[in-house]
Length: 256
Picture 1: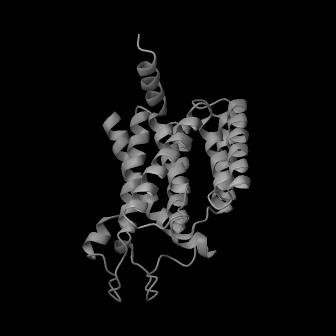
Picture 2: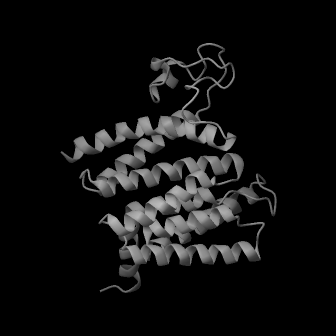
Picture 3: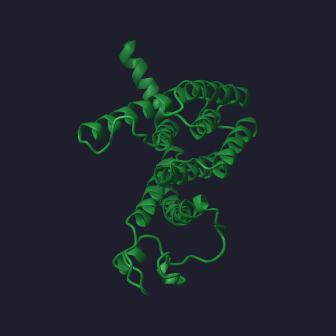
């Protein structure tokens, strides 16, 4: 049964990933995510149902619009496959049990995927996604079992948000208010100590990748890079495997 439920979640992730592509494209432009129907951004061709099948339509169309033959970005199937993989991992970590906590985790992951690619494209983290993420996380902590308690969630959100707000005041070129609000939402969802792990992972990978890009001269000194994707990645890792990582850390520091 575990394999069945995780497979269902993975297939569901493909569908959600297709929807997230719409969110990633339209939200920064202030467009409705419902109307008009999905269409080619180059020629406006409205896509037929068989052109909307996640991943397979991209392969069948050979990565080009059927009408104008404009190239379709690899990101579309990439987002779909990423969402499917993370949905499968979340379901596996939940032992294939379909409950409200799993649903919340899938929503959390979905919003973080959308925010990641929007931040990469626009260097912004839209409030229309961040504020609902914070609200859902706080409400879940008080009313849905399986995560941090309500007060731990609230204190973690305020603490993480306040720390990043101070960093933004001291170094506004490197930290935006979008990052402040996002880390508060992550604190609400993860609680303590997982929010600490998430921020550590984000800082570590951000420094590693940023330093590598500088060495490769793909990035100029003091050039801003989005921190939201690293926060999102650290949060997802912490959500799915954080407790194991922390337990492993303590076992190494204090071996029995």
